[in-house]
Length: 117
Image (tube, rainbow, N blue to C red; front, side):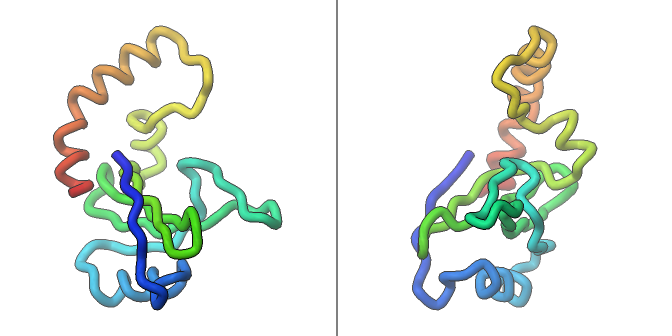
């Protein structure tokens, strides 16, 4: 589940977008390092993103892909829960990881879609 949104010029930085969500949103809002995709900035540091949490299992992550374009992904904000239920970034998975991933997707897909919407 991901979506690309083009923003107005007044929200063209992570800080201004964070302040907007902090003041207007009823969800928990945090500016964190992107530990889900391990993106890096031009200077080699880990890139930051905005996380809007609905619960320990449901949240969305926003980060800029271009100047006024934001990419939104569904993530699991809790580190322990993400370790068990998150998508593995490994290129090669063993058969147990594949099977448990399919079961997890079947069980969590509808609730994750609701939280994303």
